[in-house]
Length: 457
Image (cartoon, rainbow, N blue to C red):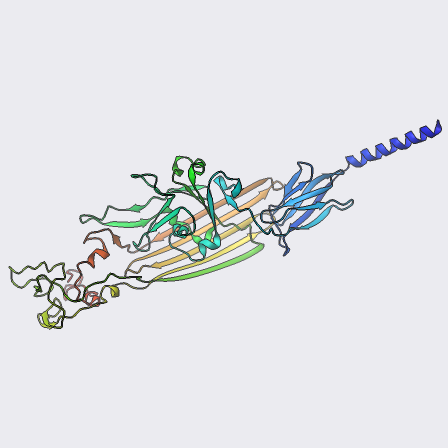
């Protein structure tokens, strides 16, 4: 009998001890880093077999409650292999290093900045990262999509430094309305319609002032995601019927401590190809050149359509009175490069400085960009100053995330070239009627002698 009592007492002691041990909880802390020792903020830390978990803070640190019966932690992060860490008795702090994954499932940004695996989406989406966008910086950021995203057709304009870009996703949807996709920058919708004045016909002027999306600075873009199809459009309503282009700007989260970025890009532009102009016949009509000087014909009955066509005498060196020869007959010879010499080398210079900071309390990024764009047409230019700022903070043990973005853009131009098809507007139109024997430099001083500022030649 005593033997049974001793066994029963021993069994009760074991149960009480086990119950006491099971009831003991502890706090597991640690730090998650990559192979180089850099912290991984936002990594998931989950107690295996439970729903208890957390995410790492800006410095990769975490803290999670564990019961005595918990055996392991599962740690995961986008782009890295998931790791299982066994919990050891008496050890409450762990330094965990994740290994980069050999093959990644692409993660894209969808509506409201939510990151999702591309394979989990029910619609087509493609992504461009910051290097693909800013490696060659365009004046209009829409041009970066050209040739890089399937089903996206970008038609650029040659109308000077402020030239717009027409973007279609999977072809035109409307015959009369706009086919531009909806641009969303950090959750803010931007209508990307084309802005111009009049149609350029019958003496009217048309000036291409560009799209709204071109104010976004390529140096400040972290990613561009192109959402295609009706399912993608449903995320943003009827305005997104032509698709959505999501732009996320950079933050200071990727920086370790304080850092400064400097970027400078200079691009040169020149005429690619000129039309084949004939250089056999000069200004005039019917083989004749009827100008006595720059304003008057020879005789009232001699009118040979000389004001706008090159059907005059042969340019073989024969002596003919010309508009700038002061009534003297001078050799009538071609100026084969007169149109090409009108244009200049365009220069587009973009300089950017950005200050990034990331600490336990949050992250910050401040960026300033100066762009100076001189067009290939003389006296055309565009100057732009862009200031972009991002502030982020995680509070209440990373259960609440705050993010504020601000952008200020100031663009100015002394002159933007007209476009269209009319003698009063388009520069290109003028070359159809330009005298083949006149050097362009002879016209640069265009004021009549003694009547500067009052009468043009």
